[in-house]
Amino acid sequence: MTEGTRAVRVLLAEDQGMVREALAALLGLEGDIEVVAQVSRGDEVADAVAAHAVEVAVLDIEMPGMTGIEAAAEVRRRSPGTKVVIATTFGRPGYLRRAMEAGADAFLVKDAPAAELAEAIRRVLRGERVIDPTLAAAALAEGANPLTARERDVLAAAADGAVNADIARRLHLSEGTVRNYLSMAIQKTAARNRAEAVRIAREKGWL
Picture 1 (cartoon, rainbow, N blue to C red):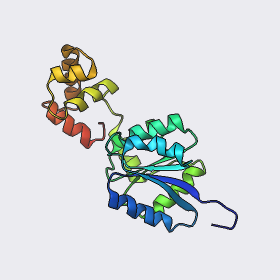
Picture 2 (tube, rainbow, N blue to C red):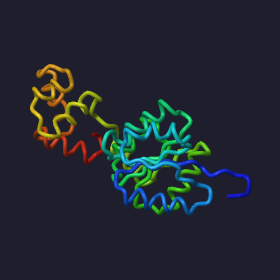
Picture 3 (cartoon, rainbow, N blue to C red):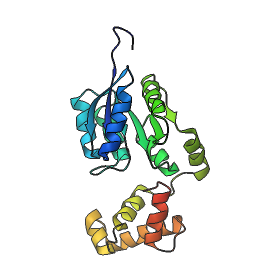
Picture 4 (cartoon, one colour):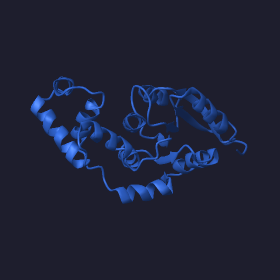
């Protein structure tokens, strides 16, 4: 960082403390990057971004409270000037598509070198979009998520083994509507039952 320039203000959102602290330490070695906030829950991201004047938010996907993809959409709504980088262990094509739809500026997998994350932070600030090339190719080959938003909601609600009546109450739907959505989700995932539909949808990053 040259004299007179200011470090980029970065937030890290990651539920695993050791991973989060390691990332913070590695980014702290970059002279032009400053980690000004760390959170362990997705539903803490948007408030922390606003409170610390964050310029780039680096988000994991699977966190308690709210997923990184949901948090990205919330940051985009509340702090549209903040750039969002998704850095995840789960390099699934469906996750990439959903992250881009939520307004993420970059999508990286965590097995990439820390230097790549630092460079991605710099690039998104320049207005570029950064996507892991292997994952981008896989996303193109995979095609779009066939599940509608409501089918995803119902399938996600069924993931813990809930019966149709419980799902209906939770989502304010009729039991018949729940059955129809589950039937369509099973059909679209080419699954034999709802449990297999949940597994397939998760593996592809559709949930």
